[in-house]
Length: 613
Image 1 (cartoon, rainbow, N blue to C red):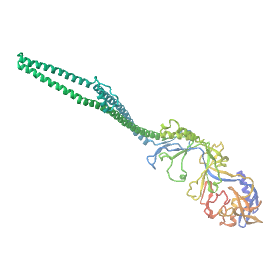
Image 2: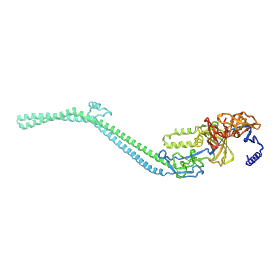
Image 3: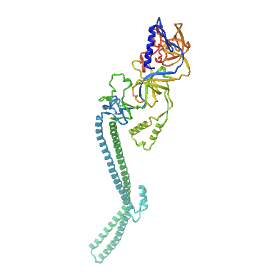
Image 4: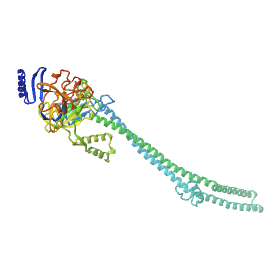
């Protein structure tokens, strides 16, 4: 209504009252009574849309929080402090600097960690060079062992004069050697040499015998002297000894030396084989140990590099940038808005914790109202029904099954998941059923109305404040659907009217302040009706209601005059909607709606709803 017309109307009413007369405007009558000024309302059929009206504050429907990701040294300690921060309320573009956090301690950690990384890299390089040296040494040892084995086998074959089959057992080779000695072997050569010398000695012995016999005959004939004959006999005896010596040498060669030398050559072959295996095993063991040492040092290097990367990532996290275009809003917890504590204050020099929300960048093109609904009405409020699209889960599964998934670091994998969430944040859900319709009026723009709908209704009650600890309120988000939201800013006060049940037909309704009785009476209440100029008490049965009117199903007829201020008739002890002593609330919810508890311990309805339904 036009404010000027309203002023004229009030002036007219006051003039009529001053004259002591009666003036009627629509269904509302005013007249003078003995008990004071009685206000009445004429009952007429009307459409009664059921709505819920609450106060709230504007905020963006698409908020991006800027969080401190710098890690604290230990639990409960501060991570860093603020060096510079952009002014609150500044309009920023995506990627614009917002805040600088102190990174001096992280720079010191980076320098110290870089030294550790260099040391670890040097150790890895030394381990790799040690592996190369061991590999060459192992090859040299194995080659020497192979050569020693080949020489031992050749010595055996040279002794036997035959080729020895590879892998032949020692005793088997010995038995084979006894049966397979040939004329080409070294032993056969020694044996033939001894045998030749034995035959030569036997031949010489026969010659010495003939000469000794000749010498004896010559002495008898007088051709030789006895001494000369004795010399020939001495030569014969010496030749006999030489023959016996050669025969004994041949016997020892055949009976003992042959087996001893064969056993010696076979043992050398076996020792050479064992030496080759030992060289291989020792080389493998040394190489395995060197590889293990290298892997250990590479693991240490990887850990040190990860720590260095983490420190550098932490240094980068000290520079905070705008995740989207919008307006800068300093973040403050809901439960600390009325607190005088400086904890969580966003200012230069203030300390911040890991994970603390610092700033909020709201998208000013998508706005919503954050309000709270009383528990008496929350069951009638319905938000959007959403369904998951599965886009994010499919992309996440594809990333997990990619060929390079196993080679990524954990930090890289987390960064990829964060990127995926950012890409699919607006398409992760689809609305299968929109929430209830609503109208939003902003105090800063009283001439404008915004079409909206209920977006979400909290499943649990919000944390109560100290003024209304016994009142249960449920956070409700109502999003504006109009595209023209120019001028709307976060934290502006707004009024939300939610269309709970649409009106289908006309009903008899009276103002809610005309109802007498508390919630303990249920839907059966009382009103006062003017009959022949006198107020009479009349029981009524209540039905639907909104923030102003309540349906009367039984007890009233059309054109009945109902007293809407029964307190002037009953006094201050009356239990009316305006003042029920046993139900007087201790605090107010959003928008100033009174709320309290009845004598039965049940929470009563908001002030903008009737005391019964």
